[in-house]
Length: 223
Image (cartoon, rainbow, N blue to C red; front, side, top):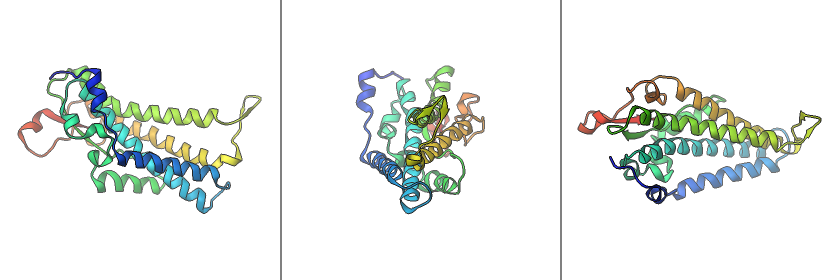
């Protein structure tokens, strides 16, 4: 496999309108949370649901995109052909198992359950490259969660070294904290060496594959 140039990688990344809509929905949810009165009310509940659920799907897209773009960087051109570089959640997911089930778990107050998957041709990769492809997704979750926590921490006023949460934006900080929690739990679950649940290639080469076909022997998934 021939590795693409930096220009080819940039040209191949084409975020679609669906991803843009998710970003707009998350921003709208944040705006509702920021403008709502402290406590439970229609604006705070609606804003929180919109921000957390849209934010979670966005992070799912970025997680799978990280797997795909890393594989593409190492020469797997199929990542572009399969639409994995468009950040379209429908390219990474099964509507029921990958979207509905994880979102239901979140609505029930659960954890960030891994949802999507990309098919990666690892036949020409070194062991180090396979490891990097597998780790790209959970590292993305850790980075997103860390950035959110930094924003929550340092966007607040502090008095004499004491962290103070502003009541005016309490709902926004709570929603962002929940979203950060989902990122960290998703990363932890992905790093557990369990096929079908994780970035398994980090520690072993047995991952889910497509049903029997000739190319399936050399194509493995990152989730």
